[in-house]
Image (tube, rainbow, N blue to C red; front, side, top):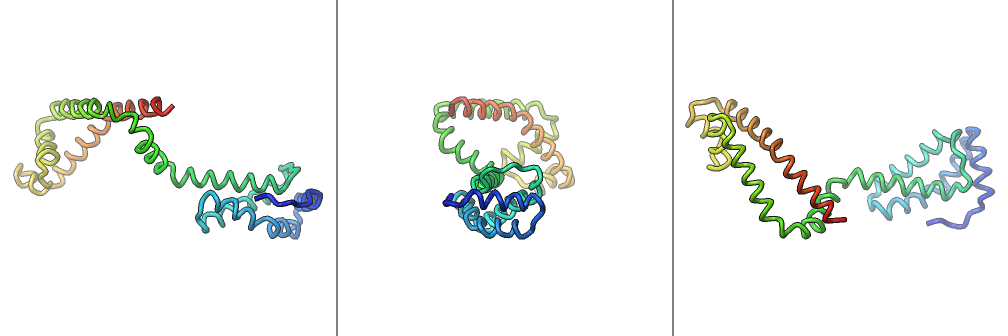
Length: 195
């Protein structure tokens, strides 16, 4: 929260800071660190990360002191803290936010297409399995369709367990590549639906 401060005092402190005055830096730090911490904490609610954000803001202020032209130090510092907090949020929860948004907002709009998508995915998997080399297809079906362990498959087919694992890895990787376009289609549909 921005408090009423004497901007002239801040301008004097910043002018001294630009000259490399350590005391001016300490004065600015002592004056604003707690407010910046509160600004970050409102967004992150994580004490450790908020301390890091405050340190980053002041480190950046010191490192860039010669190139910065600041007319309102308080506003600049609070904006920097908010930006750092939002950046931290996006780094921490990009995947979580996307998954939550997808699950709560987007999929609700796609539920009518769910059966169609399942059928399309199943069709792609069936085509994929048919296109596999015979030995790899047999291993893939035994493991994923019949739920047999790699040890059991190796024993039944007189292969090493490592060979079975390698065949499954190769097949799984290829299947993921085949299904990528389907999932890309789902994501594009979701984004269009979300607009």
